[in-house]
Image 1: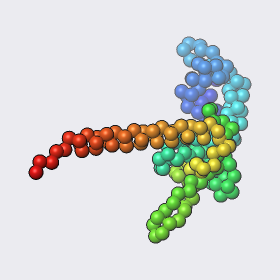
Image 2: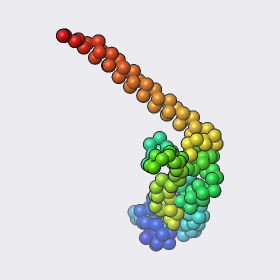
Image 3: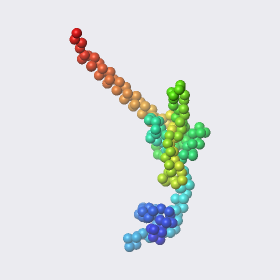
Image 4: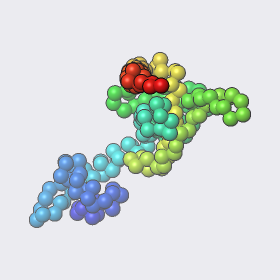
Length: 190
């Protein structure tokens, strides 16, 4: 079959079919500068894709949240909402932190008309996942006080906090030296 027919059958673009042919994802031969695709191979690829589409996208950690210094988890919105509501941990996918578990819900103190603590879960909605049609994704904030199930993340956060404190201390030392020079060079002629 040709690339147009294959694309229609697989519900993908002709460019995707050509890429599959070039990369050996489907069995195909080139005749007179046109791909001829094996229908059995294409059917197998469609079946593999259908099985993959029923899975959910992995939950991954992100530092891109609305609150600086607070991590978030990107994943299926319904799963994240349920875990936040139930107070159960999320198991992360991805590469460096796969298998680590985090809890959702960032607690912060609010001083509107007194002092209260608010726990925020949902940070932002991301819309439909590009690789998993029909799955809405969101970002939920991580409880930064409960990172015992995520040792890699906990160590990374500790290092980042230490660097931040070191920078702040260096700025304070620089300001103190500057103030000392200004004071030493100030003369009072009366």
